[in-house]
Image: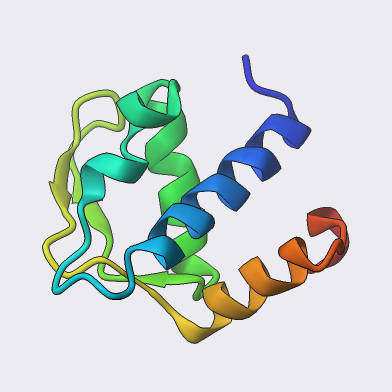
Length: 99
């Protein structure tokens, strides 16, 4: 089971990987998939849902069961708020204090 700290590390990694792809015409979602991050699909879906609900990413939704979701990520992208959050983490801010 992932700890809260692990979840913040995963969030940081997802945002960094999305930022690294901003010059591409479309995101290669396999770069921040559950498999590429070494985590379970339910945990990944919950984290991506949190990122979307908090306005850090756009274009993510799912339907069905979290363990076998039908993903809608065709237009997934980093939102301005997510870019700002990632920049603060890079600058050394503790992500737990950035809410």
